[in-house]
Amino acid sequence: MAITSANQLELLQTAEAVAREKNIEPGLVVEAMEESLARAAKSRYGAEMDIRVSIDRKTGRATFTRVRTVVADEEYENYQSQFTLETAKDWIKDAKIGDTLVEEVPPVELGRIAAQSAKQVILQKVREAERDKQYEDFKDRAGTIINALVKREEYGNVIVDVGSGEAILRRNEKIGREAYRPNDRIRCYIKDVRREQRGPQIFLSRTAPEFMAELFKMEVPEIYEGIIEIKAVARDPGSRAKIAVISYDSSIDPVGACVGMRGSRVQAVVNELQGEKIDIIPWNEDMPTFLVNALQPAEVSKVVLDEEAGKIEVVVPEEQLSLAIGRRGQNVRLASQLTGLDIDILTEEEESKRRQAEFELRTKLFMDTLDLDEFFAQLLVSEGFTNLEEVAYVEAEELLVIEGVDADTAGELQARARDYLEAQNKKALDHARELGVEDSLIGFEGLTPQMVEALAMDGVKTLEDFATCADWELAGGWTVVDGQRHKDEGVLEKFDLSLEDAQSMVMTARVALGWVDPADLVGDDDDTDMEEEAEA
Image: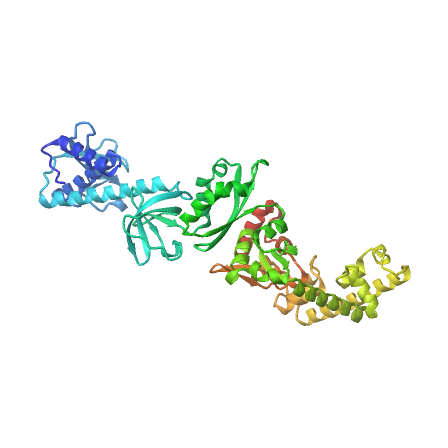
């Protein structure tokens, strides 16, 4: 692309041709030409000079100018492009720092080397403009499906043509052992679009759960129109998937609509996903009911939900156990992903044994601590009492409903329970003090003597120590590593302390110590921010 000053209109014609070919603004090409001409002029007049070029957008005339700027004495470095304030007064009336002197200089004829250099500058600018346009075209298309043409394969990753550039389908985003040949047409989900140094990177996926959801949206008009909503998707790509749907029109069956006449709609999705089997499940706000649906085709006898711990126990008949778990745990794993809960599956026999063990353990607790015979201890457990605190501080009327318990017996039971608890509290506090716990922590509201003892054994001995703890360090939590959830044991987890209560107690301690202003504690988000700042 040799550029000469012989034909001024040739510049504009070249700019328009390049812009049309690359589908970018002609102005961007003209700016690239101005920069390339300025660079060529500097090689002619001297690199120290500030040479600028302006191309008239109508006539194509290129104007070459030399610019000199007035700078402070301590900033003066280059006499070719700068003036000191004193020198500038000879050239500029009422000169001040920042003023410029613009002088037109003769245009430069481009030789072969200069023309080649200018061409490189223009091509570089055009490539940058192309990248910017590609990013602008795709940044808002993340989360949608695109049809692409396979160009080549590199180390298992597939490079595809998406019209105005290239995108990458990584090896781990392909279904199973999919293999593609050049010019194959494939349908992918745009997972992410990022602006990187070497240009925009468009990352595609065929294994993302959202890919299946978008495919159903294309095949099922009711989903596209919002009558049916996809609430959750769980996939084992290429093998099996579960999708939960709900209908906002009582006359439309969400499962039937997704299946289609003779399975036509779901079959279209299955074919696109290389034969992946799809279970379509009706979504339900009631989590146990939803889980029973999610574990289909297995039959469930009973569901026990522990929302605080995010766990759920499912009891199934012995003959349904393998069906509920699925091959290599696939069925229960997908159901867990769909509900967002950890699922423990027990047979009816296992659950019965566990409940019997819990019954015997609580019976022994009451026998040993309250000096009761086995029959009376069993009566307490049968009535739902699980620990000494419940017996000690429950309303007396709740004990009187137990057969054979009168007012005197109820009073004696509560007195024994309180005496035992007080003795245990004293023992725990004495041990904590031996470990060096300060009174500021012992007197902190919400901490029982046993909690203080547990904290002391973990090295938390002052209110300041307690205030530096994170909520999950106290109440326990979960960490996700490589897609697997790992349990973090909390110091006070055995006392059934929730994350919310742990966070509240830590923040109260920080306020008491003056680390946090109480006025700043407005809303949950602000609480979290304050906690992170205090920890930092």
